[in-house]
Image 1 (tube, rainbow, N blue to C red):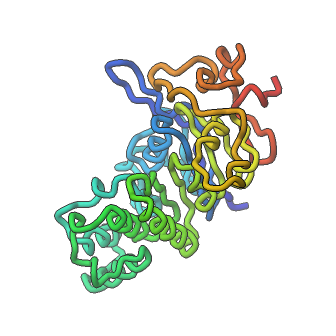
Image 2 (cartoon, one colour):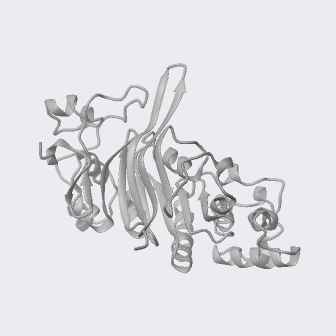
Length: 323
C-alpha cells in the first residue's frame, strides 16, 4: 500500500551552539503531513516553527532525528540532496525582499528555477511559462515581467516569491509566515492566491504562522509548538472546537473577535500571561508550566508525553496523561 504521508518528521532536533549555551530551537518533535493536505504549524516567536521549516527544506542540517519525504530519507544538508528533491520541495519566505535579487527583472527571477532544472529550452518558452505563473498570482505579465523587485510593493513581492516557488511544479511547499510582513488589505489577496494554487496543483504544504485566524481556511491539520516542543496536534475543526492544552487555549483566547458569537467560542478561564521562556535554559518538566494556571508539582518536574486522547488528537499535558 502506498504511503499516505508525503512528509514524516521523526524525533527531529535542531540545536545551535552559542557562547551563552546551546539553543534548543527544535527539541525532539514528530509530525506527519498527508498527501494533498496542509499542516498548520503555529506558535509564538521563538517557538521553533520557522527553524523546523528551514531544516525540512535543507537550509539547516538536523542535529538528530529523521525527515522522510515520499518515504525517502532527506536528513541531509541542501547541497547533498538529489536535484529532483530541490525541484520537488520549495519554500516561500517571510520577507520577500530578502529573497529576491533587486538587480534582476521579474521574468528572470521567476524563470531561474525553470532554467536550472532544464524545464525550458528557449527564452521565449521561459517568458511564456513565467507569464502563466504571474497570472496565477494575479500579477498581469504585461505590467510585471520587466520590472524589478525595488519597483514593487510588499504584497507584489510576495506574489512573485510564490510564483517562483511553484515554477518547478513542486509537490510540497513550505510557507514561512508569508503574510506577517504585509498590510491586512494585502494579506487576503496573498491567502486567496495560495488557496487557489493549492487546489489547482493539489499541493501538500506546511504553513507556518503565529496567526491562528488563518488556520481555519488554510490548514487541514494544526500543530502547536512551544519552546521547541509540540504540545498539541489535531484536525483543524477539532482544534477550534475542542482545544485541550492550556497553551492552545491561551492562544485562542487571545485571538481578536468581532461578534458576540465568536466571543462565545473562545476558551474561558485562561488569559495570555507572561512571555515565552529561553530556548537556552528552558523550564524543567513541562516548558509551559511557569505560565499555566493549571500547573501542579508534576508539571514542574516531569515532561509530559504527547499522547493520543481522541482519534488524531494529540496532547502533551499532564491533565490528560494516563499516569
